[in-house]
Image (cartoon, rainbow, N blue to C red; front, side, top):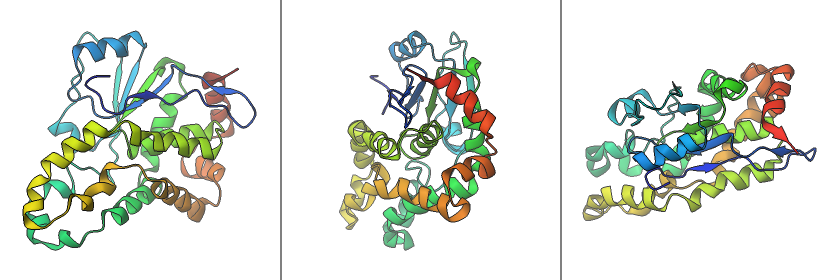
Amino acid sequence: MESIHNFRDFGGYKTKNGTMLKKGLLFRSGSLANISHGDMLQLSELGVRTICDLRSRREKRDQPDSIPEYWNGRYVHIPINGGMQPESGYISQLYSLLFGEARNINFNDVAIEAYRKYVTDFRSGYAELIKLTSESENLPILIHCTAGKDRTGFACSLIQLLLEVPSELVMQDYLRTNNHLHEFKQGMLKKLRILSFVGVSKQKFMPLFEARSEYLKAAYDQIKLDYDTVDNYFRGGLGFSDQDRERLKYLLLGK
């Protein structure tokens, strides 16, 4: 895609029992605020029926998805916050970064805390998203946030784990984001170049623009702390029953 960062299919993986997570039904990306006519046509050709926007209300207000009227699919907004939004969080507060306490922020720690909050504070949002994927009329679905990295990355990992994709493959897919964010990263770092004149290194912000295994692991550690197992989290945390899981498998798994 020429105008959408980090767009890709997150199917195609073999599950623990040897079945395959189907391709062509589950897509992920960054923001659609600047989607081109050509890329919108590609989404239509892929048959995308549902676009699920995980950005905060502020992000959606400031840069709404540019979805044309001729697209007759379903748009769903599920706001997920958590401190990792580069354009609406810490980076927008340049005065604080230049002169305030934000100079001392460790953004790697901010990222880890954000992923833990996905588990503790946004269960209803992720439960709603997974329910969308378990209804045939919503497929194929495109899930996105700003960069398609953190909120979307965690969401996609949940769906893959729920369908019993091995955890090492889930992590591998999560880290693939780093191969698709060069333009996004360069664009954001360009906006931050003013900070170099006052002694704030661009390296300080790299945790905001990378997918790191320790981030996703932090979410899993929080699941283990609160629910002991991922299965318990799906049942008790997200309210996703064994019957719901079987319906999801029926829709999304094949040979």
